[in-house]
Length: 135
Length: 63
Image (cartoon, rainbow over all chains, first blue to last red; front, side, top):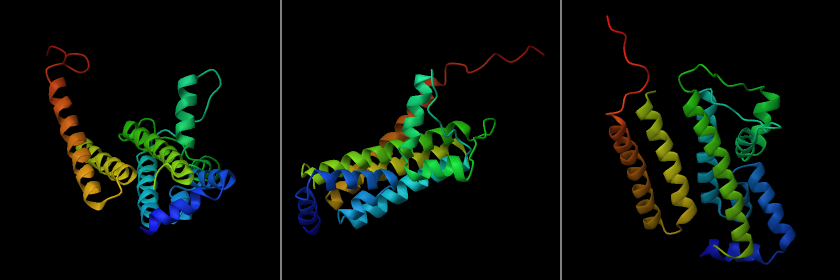
């Protein structure tokens, strides 16, 4: 019940707030849901997305970057970017690189791509909740 | 970790995610989680067995 009234309150705050919350959701998995007062759900989403990304990196999976002239690689790059700040931290702070010949390379790719795509779904979920289409 | 282990972890994460994303009631979340988890694992094992008759890679050299 509290979640319903909180999500309704969020939906009356205006379009600007809704898109701000969606940006939060993209930057940090679960942050959008946390801002909307859905704390337990936020914790679960953060844990799942973070776990998927971590496992993918530990397996040495590919962290794609958009590449000119390579549409499929670019698509994968945008999917990986769905993870938010973590993507840029891995790329530019930790200088992450894939272990192409490693045993877990293919699985790692799947985990990393899934983490990004899951977070994109979370952004869409937050937009729906913010607009009052969902609770 | 083996392929089966990794596949199980992937199925677990995906099932938890979608159970929480698509359902609000606790019982319905658990039910959807179970359906997705079992479906993913059983489906993957079934597809693996379906592919079993077909060889992967070049044939072994004749000794």
